[in-house]
Image (cartoon, rainbow, N blue to C red; front, top):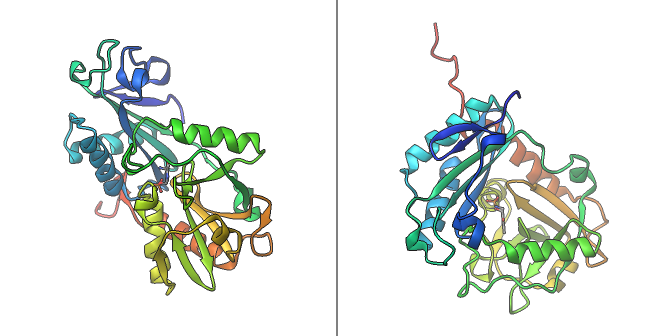
Length: 299
Ligand code: PMP
C-alpha cells in the first residue's frame, strides 16, 4: 500500500493530516461510538451488522450520525478502495464533535466521522496453533444499568484496566466477570466454552457486547450441528470446560488453553474450536459485501 488515506468528515486526507481538535468531546470525554470491521480478500465481513450496531450505539447515547446507513456503507467501501486494500482492519469512529471544555454534548454542533483502513494482521498466526493463556481479573464489567456494555462507546476505560491487569499477569488477554461473578467477556472479545460437545456463551444481559463474530459463530456452530446455549457460567465452569475460545473481529476464533493457571483440556486447541475457526475462515472470504466491483459482467 502506498499513501494511507483516511476518511475525515467527508474528505480523504493522508495519515499525517488526519487531525482532530483537542476540543473534540471524543478526546475530552470519550463521548462517541465506534466499530472495528474486517475486510477479507476485498469482502467486508458483515458490514451491515456493524453499521447497525454503530447506529444503535449512537441512538442509545443520542448522537445523530450525519449520514444515512447507506451513505456510511458507501464511505467505508470507498475508503477501502482508496487504500487499495484486500485484507485489512477498519476502524470507524463517530465522536460527539467539537464543543467547549464543559461536558454538555448539546454544545457540540457536528459529530466527527473518521474511517481508518489499516492493512495489518492483528493476531500473530502462531497463536491460533498454540492457543493463548488468559487470567480472570479483579476489574468487573460495567453494570448494564450503569453503562450498557452493548453500547460500543469510546469509553473503554473499563476494558483498558482489564488489559493492564492482563499485562501485570504476563498474559495478553483476560476474562472479565460481571458484578455477580458470572463470566462476561474478554477485554475486546466474546467468550465461549464447550463441555461434552455443547457450546455455551454468556447471554447479553450478563454484560457482554453483542459481538458480530459471536453471532457468526453461533450460526456456524448451529449449521455444523452443535447445540449452542446462551447461558450464564462461572469461572469454575471455564476451568473444567473441555475447550474455551474467544471471538472478535480482531481475534477471529482463538483457542484459550490456560485460565488462571488451570490447563484447559490437554493444553492445545481442541478439535471443536479448530473446526469452528476453519469454517469461519472459509466463510469470511466467501461472504460479505464486495469492496471492489467484479469483472463478472464485463465483455
Ligand atoms: N467485546 C468487546 C468489549 C469488544 O470490544 C469486542 C470487539 N468489537 C468484542 C466483544 C467482539 O465483538 P466483534 O465480534 O463484533 O468484534
